[in-house]
Image (cartoon, rainbow, N blue to C red; front, side, top):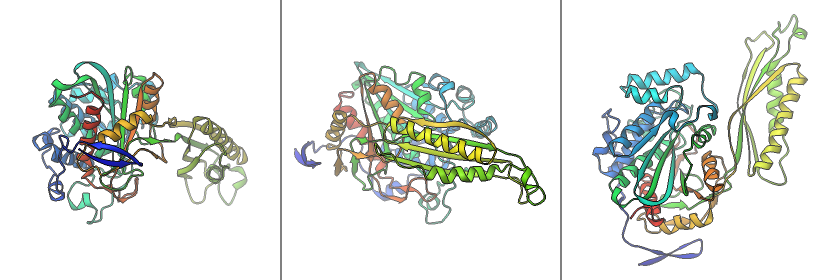
Length: 468
């Protein structure tokens, strides 16, 4: 036995590594498969499987509520491993979904998945953007543990430079304008490799383990629908993870993030009146000017003395012609705060800004909430268990008890659902150097973090008495 320090406290370390061994970088680079089978990676050793799966998912990136191929791959893999599988409407409440794309967009992505030979029965269950999946493995009587892995990509183009690793190694996104630039491909790959590792130990399972593969995390749109469908019912402990947030060294982990920010995503539409810009501008009502005034004043909102806040307008569009008063404009904004109370105040002020800009320019305003989640923090006692488990994992060298997340993630909705019923929840950071920041076209992470993530989750479940 040996001892390491974590935040100044000694931890006893079991020198025997867990079931997943680290693999050399050259082996990782060789892990791209060309087989189109959804379960092809299961033929590989586990540590290579997780990398090959990530690359397959990266190549076939799909945005929120449109993850038809991704979800079908999850379903096929879990079934091949003998997990009980629920998917589609069984785990995704229709009315609770936020920010669902237009029907035509959903149908376009579904048709693309169908063209790849996806099981039509699986697709039918997911029709109209019901892309959640849950795998269940039951053992002897005991507690229920849920682990959540988000699946969606962003609507952002990917770097096409030859030096970008996915381009260099042949797994860049083949879907134009869609890119896994937040690491969710890695999260899903970790979940599927963990499913295999646990299936191989099914006789040692105590209680119930649920692997929750969530759609539409980007924009905070998907978790609430799974909670409303009962996916968190009866859960005693909850685990989530993210790659490369406040942890940028390979082998570093954050045992439990605190201060996951509450957030609200707002879409605003301004409807004015068009007119000739030179002959009769006085007849027009300029929706684009209203949207521009709103954008500036949203960013000018005063900060709150009782908490941390963030405001951003990320999309602004409008107008019909150079020589016409713009009759239509839209903006997409988000607000964040470290408590729901502060977020509510910020929301009121934001709505005042939008309404004032519309009144100023004599245009009509309509708004909708496109995404939302509350604030959350990890339970310290469960984070301590994660730290203890991490100390037994070969390759984990830096263990941090906690860190501020500094962003939002709708895993917070699942955490709250568990915590409000007396359970515990934790959101874990998996350290990796990044080629560029999250949501950038050149984003990428060190794939060696993937087998480490699998090993950590297996150790965490063993530490908590869910395995062995």
